[in-house]
Length: 294
Ligand SMILES: [Zn+2]
Image 1 (cartoon, rainbow, N blue to C red):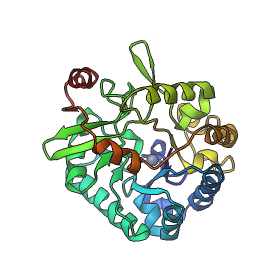
Image 2: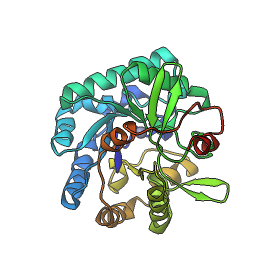
Image 3: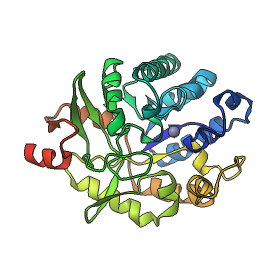
């Protein structure tokens, strides 16, 4: 179970219409919404990874401490919610370095995991992995093995793997998908979780559990369970993607939490890092490479 800790106005769909300098003037709901998730997780005995935005940690370090004190892992969602492929390597490095420092200061724990805003590590931003390795991140959860207009590497592996890069290696922990014919379908969180029947997500968990390197990875955002959040102006498609199913989010989540156990990604990555996983380079069809190495 993973949570990207950001406010309702940080969502990438508002890039271009809501300038970042206005964020500070909007009503913040990330604290109360994250606390609500923490209560739900606590009563279900769930331990999770929270990919916290540096911008949030800077303003509410006590929230980061609260999450860590409940036994959850603090990981990084970058500082300013900028897409990796929209940045230069230097700007990206500054962003992930600043986020890591803020999160480590607030939590008093090492931060080794990263998830890029909107899964924005794609074929044109693979250099970002080298930056992450250089900045001391040990695992990444940003490569979505699907076809999508804004993100994804459709041929990348669906399960955890170690990725060789010029700067070294990094463990990749992709969000779970359902295999349907030749396609990987995204069902593991966000709008997909709120839109599709719950049985589809359960199928993704089952498929991941069957694979020897399978770690079911689900992802949520605190604002997804807040039906009362202010609605910001969006076009029809953006409005649908962002707000679909928000009213039924909480009851679906409660049901999900009652079905599964969860542990922080750092534990799963640690176990996998101790094992010999197929090491290969992105650029070759990695599902094939993984099979060849097995
Ligand atoms: Zn995000």
